[in-house]
Length: 286
Image 1: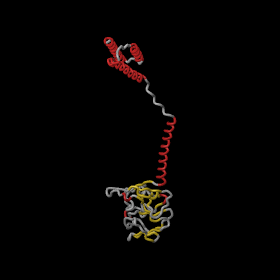
Image 2: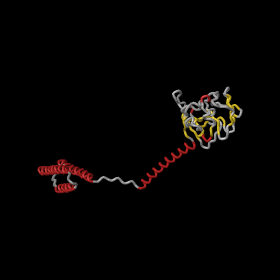
Image 3: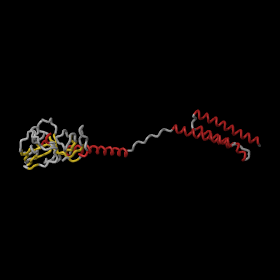
C-alpha cells in the first residue's frame, strides 16, 4: 500500500515538473492563447485518469503537486490576459458632438459681442461724454497742478461763469496746444480789473474768487472795461500773475466754437520733482 502511494505521488510530481517546463517554454516563445486551452484539456484528462488509492489522511503528500498544477493554470491566465490586451487596438476618442460644437460657437460669439460692445461704449464715452487730458504748466494753480490728468466733457455743453474749460486758440501762438482756463465773463457781461487792488469786476461788481492763487496785478495787454460779444467768453488762469489768458493779445476773447469741453474732475493728481502726488486733490474741479 505504501509503495502504491509513493508511485502515485512521484507520478504527480513528474507531471508538475513537465508542466512547469512547458510553461517556461511557452512564456519565452510568447505562444498564442490557444495553447492555454490545450493545457487545460491535458490537465483535466490527467486528473480524471489519476487513481489515488490511499486514505484521506495521505492527501497532504499530494497537496504540493496540486498547488503546482493550480499555479501553472494561474500563470497561463495571466499570459493570456497580456496577449489579449496587447492585441486590442486603442479606443479612438469619440468626436465632439454637434450640440457641443454649437455651444462652443455660441460662447465665442457672446464673448466677441461683449468685447465689441465695450469698445463701442468706450469710444462713445470718450468722444461725446468725457475724455482725459493732461495739464501742462502752473497757470491754473491752486485748482489744477502741473501734470494733473483731468476728465473733460463737451456733451450738451454751454459755457457758464466760473467753469474751467479746455479750448484751442484761434492763432498759432501756442503751437495748437489746448489751453485750460476759467471762464470769468460770458456774452453780454462787462469785465474790468483794478490792478492796484487786484480785484476783478463783472458788471460793476467785485467778483468773489476763492479759487485764485493770488490777486490780479499783472495787466499784460488788457485795456478795460470790455463787454464780451455774443459767441465769446473772457477767460483767466487762477494763478493770475503767471497765466497767458484773455488779457494777452495772443489769446484774447475765446470763440465758443473753439471750446473742447468743460473740466469735470481731477482723475489723477499730478506729481513732479518739487511736489509729490497728493491724492486728497482727487475729485471735482471748482
